[in-house]
Image 1 (cartoon, rainbow, N blue to C red):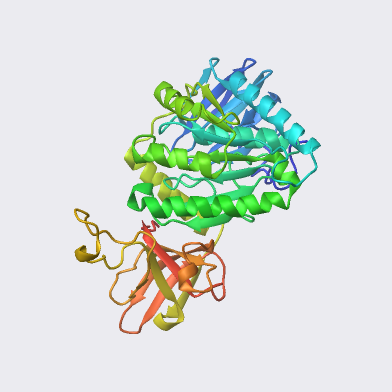
Image 2: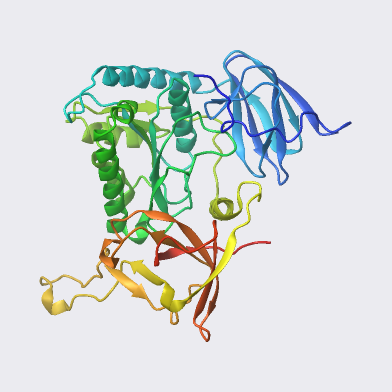
Length: 445
């Protein structure tokens, strides 16, 4: 399968560099080396002058300028050597010839062989061989997202259509943070635009850490896994291609328990551990009784950059802005106003506590983590909240229902009983059931 095509490479912004650009720079890369780049506050343009190179496993087309947004961190890797040209200012850029790419592509080769083996068995019986179900785990800033993109893109280049699953509510690779989601991948990922959203299956957890409501997080992970399982039963092609699962960087205590929960829930067959010996040892030990699970230790790339709390917060804000306005602010969201009576806002978790007398001796009363409660729009300030539009037909289905999209509340007029929100498309909302979490956004102009 060749790279390229309209959905891979949007038209170049221009075919030539503006005359006399003083920020033009050429970098020659030797075989199996990479150019590591941190884009500054201004966009950066880049192209391959000769040779071949890839970003996140997706090959760059020759001689076509691509524009990368501010603050993006990425690496241009070449297997056989390439000359890269940049136009713009970078925060940093440097070449490196020590990379873990050979070990990563070796993993891909093994996964590819397992996919071919699964495809050779045409039975849809649940006992027939399945394609690899790969879960990538490791601490924060170990390069999990980058590795998942590479494995997905390399598989798509071979003609497979693997399913990508994102369980990292902190950043959100597919859609808005606070969500867990899955999407089939039919082409190598665009290195700028990332994952396609048009066929995504999204559940709105509503918070940026599982700690806010562990039971709800586990329930939604299970819900997503069950839907994908049903889809795989009816689709031998997806079943053989398997899935690649990205996880959060919380690996201690409850975080570790949630990783084990995800491994079991998705019936993972390959666990790739990035950058931590202790986690590898623990998982190897706890999973040794499962003969069908391989635990593999991989080195993290030296290009992985630690991101502080502010950087993550900015990243979340950028992802929300991108949802409503597009990557380059090329979209115009629609401002709509609804009466309080036309929508119902719900929150998951909390609710009345059980009386102490009804609990076992010594127990403390706790609220029900899966309870769905109605939010009184007049009493609760929803201004600047991100609300999900639920596919549920009844309030008691909200926990188990996926969502069709999101709106951003820009005004709550208690006197007129009106709520104003931004939506990505015009017209009436697909549902009157809206779900609130703790996710908010302050739009910057």
